[in-house]
Image (tube, rainbow, N blue to C red; front, side):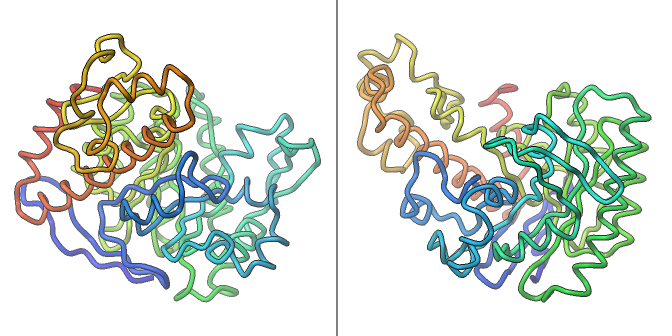
Length: 372
């Protein structure tokens, strides 16, 4: 993996960069759609290619559970299995282990858990998680970390942070000794809940490992928006400038904007696709609840400023009708539009940073979404 900073905004820490893997060159800031099990819900692979995504995210835990590493290995890796020529980032599965399992026992060596599918017992170590991602063929792999709930007492947050750092140290050693660093990159994950001192300490200790990239985990898990912003603003100055900075699980346009302003490069979240399936759509005038009665006879485009297939082809009235009728096409069209919006949104932000107009773009979208 190669990472180059291209342009820095003069009034903020926003920046544009270029991240090159064995499969694609990704311009950042970038939003990565989530293909949890190797597919993005309600979307075809052609849709993803047409919108223009160069990188998508899949989940180590879910792919390990089904179809299993033996199937993916036999297929020649996830790229061939899914027939996607772009890049994959795979998270470690740690969040799913801690959130989905009925049984989850954290030990020094790793974490024991039950499958959410059949209750079978499994054990993830930092090394095993990387081995799974080796089989998947991930362009960017995430280390195993210990995820925490919100709220959490500080002593418990520190214990989870210490475990995360120890596992990252083991991951770094295993990665350096057994992986082709040109073919697969490995990112560490900064934890510490909503405690600034823990976040800073975790960042400094992980930076010493000199891994290819660094992620912020454990935010956007229910904490107040003010705390998310405080953690983001205070943590970014302690992350390396010459490596990718990845904010995990954030998909709100305003929170993405805020993080970009403070120097974050990469984002992923199921929010744009999940709310689309529930009838909420991002547009150039803010959120639109397509279920609302006001659109029953609204024969205008969903977003007149959007060039996507949905906005060029259908009216708000029609989109409301098929949603209320329970048509599968509604999920497809809504999801397509929201992902197209996210791609264009990130493109506009990049262009504004390069042009020196990020401040105006930031103010424009802040007014449009007004805290949405």
